[in-house]
Amino acid sequence: MSLLDECIEALGENVHILSDSKKEQVLSNFESSYPFTEWGRIEWENVVFYAEVNTVDEIVSFLNKNIDDYNNAIYVIWDEGTLPIIQSDLDKVFEVIDDVTAVSFDTWIFSPSSGYVIEIFHDGKVRIGLK
Image (cartoon, rainbow, N blue to C red):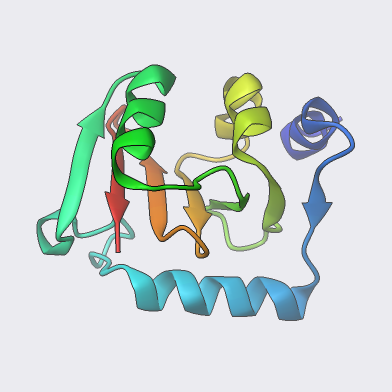
């Protein structure tokens, strides 16, 4: 079983693997919502409002202070282009975050409807920002 398979199994029933066309649509939206460096990290100094966080509680606190309804469906995007994009619930992703981040080096949790992104980068830094 691959790490992706383990992640999908851990997320359970409320996970959807996007079709290629939907994946391209989400990626396009994601890339137009946030500036990126040449090496694939969000260019945080060009994001108006963001914070570096260390725990899920800090992420939830940031969201509670800045967004009315943040627990909409989110997309999980990995840096490996051959991997699919999955849609799930933020709470469920947090429950199995180790399975989610084990799939690839860098992981983004993107909510286009609420306007936030969480970047979990391979150097250990976790940042959350609003577009």
